[in-house]
Amino acid sequence: MKIVLQNLTKKFPSRNRKSHEDVVAVGDFTFEIPDGKLIGLLGPSGCGKSTTLNLICGLIKPTSGKIFFGDNDVTELPPENRGVGMVFQNYALYPHLTVKQNILFPLENLKGKDKLSKTEMESRALEAARLVQIDDLMERKPSELSGGQQQRVAIARALVKMPHVLLLDEPLSNLDARLRLQTREEIRKIQRKTKITTIFVTHDQEEAMSISDMIVVMKDGIVQQIGKPQEVYDNPVNLFVAKFLGTPPINAFDGKIENQTLYVGEDAVMDAKGVLDQEVAVGIRPEGFILQENGPLCCKLNRVEVMGRDISIVSTHGAFTGTAIRSIVDAEHSRHATGEYVHFALKPKKVLVFNKETQERIYINGNQHT
Image (cartoon, rainbow, N blue to C red; front, top):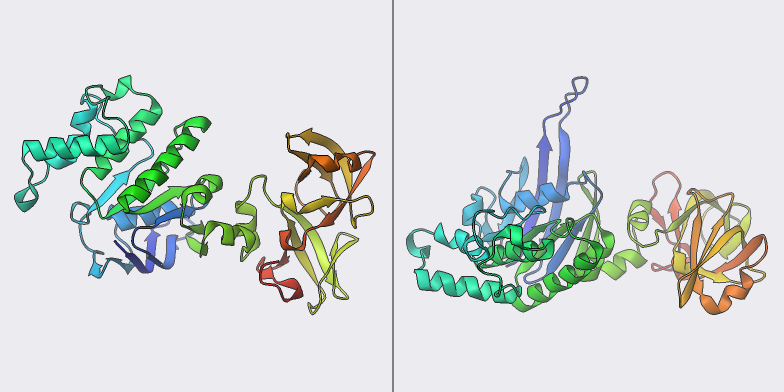
């Protein structure tokens, strides 16, 4: 099912007594979600991603704009008539019901032409349980299940209705790190098998990038960038997106372009042909550093952290805007990480330059993918 969001806006009344301006939770969101794809809605707390999901689901109504499922305008349609399956952060399972009864619950409420026989309901419930690999837990209560198993029950309950659209609102946040990794892989596998158009809300950028066909990065209710995960990582449109994506995060420095040369502090690190002299912000991905004895970027060495195949060099620089620079380099080059200072050459494609005031991307050397 293709989903089209057309100038979607949601405003809430201000609770600030001094300001009566409405709070814009989602602002003029226009996007077409292709049929059968998994889309990650990504951003910090309060960015509007869960509000967008609730608008698509029908739990809240937009202030303006329209929502289409296929060619059908569903903007005013109640949630129960949209053909949507929803999985919440807290799973919302009924504690007094068994796994089987929890999965069956949505089917038992179907009426009219949609009403199913008991045999049909049980067959569909078993099929959904098998899909998420909990068919051997059908007689247990939620209290007898692990967090990961409860999460699978919630997904099975959403899938049993055979929805056109599956909406997942931070479904992994209550799981430990190992279970999160395992369960997100399962969600991707289920989505590919069912080919249901899925929207996955998370603040965890690694989670979103690992399973999404496309990601939507949001900030303060406004869409910042939409694209394939790797494309957005390699080519962020502004400093916010660059900082939000990546583990470890991008290293941000104060810099300048002077005489067609890019400076980080006073270190001339790269050519910047054709770019006007100006103050800039410079972002360098952790993997963008090359240990080099006479490299142009000179940093004060704090320590070296061994990571096996790679090493993480922790250092400082007068123009750095954070607390410590993290550079991921091949362990074979660790011989250069000695003494009080360490020198780096930089990989041009991993150096991102931004306007100091607007924080919008500046493309240097005519390359859209620097």
